[in-house]
Image (cartoon, rainbow, N blue to C red; front, side):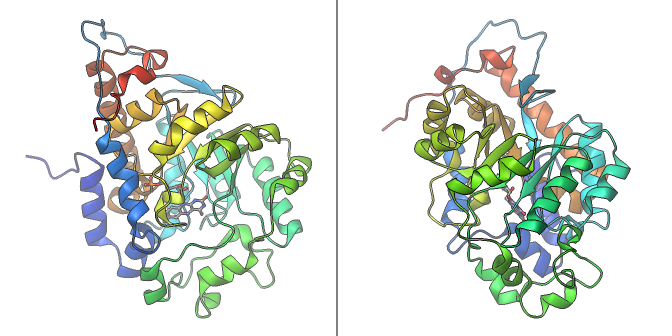
Length: 362
Ligand SMILES: Cc1cc2nc3c(=O)[nH]c(=O)nc-3n(C[C@H](O)[C@H](O)[C@H](O)COP(=O)(O)O)c2cc1C
């Protein structure tokens, strides 16, 4: 008999029972009626696998190369804001866990640990910086250059949030950071962004700083301020993906922000094939939203993703077990993926091809 969570759903249940209501609601919420939040998951559950047999799966190789790095398996930690709501060490604990498991970590612009703290704790960790473009371009450029200087190797430019999606639970709670937590990446905004801003609506304050007029023509500006590869995070259409690649992006993340932005937007695994076709091998294609099982990762890779990102699973396991919890969750998910690969009769990532997915049964 063990009390340890066996899967991500059990981490979620345990975390929801443990978190204070304001943090719990912030982490779990989707926009409006949460249709996309649910659909991201249900779309995976609708897919069926046509597995191979007798494929000699004794030795497995789950490694895969994209954006110039070989990853031990096709998974990256998604950037999520305010990790210190889950655990006092927040992003630093996640950085340690990710590094121990060889996983790349996405760091949110709204992280509650500074890039310096993260870099000091894990100097040779693999990290990407998530970027919101602010009306204040000097601040935006500072964030990018600070990320570069502290060892981030890619920029994930979030393109699905020109304005903030409406999460009614956060509105009801008047979401605020508890005293003592801040957003160090935004320190250079007048007066910094500390909990005292919270009373006037922290998320609204942040949203007001984001530049909703940022558009395709401004991508040149970003390319001019950084040497790092830029991923466009939040794409769900082939034409947008192609336009991004034409504009010099290194790749795209098929994402709807975990169902937190436009409700009733398409489930990401349903959007993936069109984007893969449009990118046509010119760069990396990643996907996130609702990935909870090894079979989800198998399906995403089969449909052409280089890797998946996971957001909430990290928050749940960080809440339940801190650094060790995140490590354990990553191990569980990796074992689950390895088992799925073996049972599907695939030995390498190259074997995980589209024909593994059954055509939709009408
Ligand atoms: C609590 C929370 C905060 C998030 N904060 C950010 C953020 O600051 N920047 C960003 O680009 N995406 C953010 N996301 C979206 C994630 O990067 C990712 O797209 C999403 O969580 C994937 O879905 P999943 O949670 O079902 O795995 C956030 C998601 C959650 C749940």
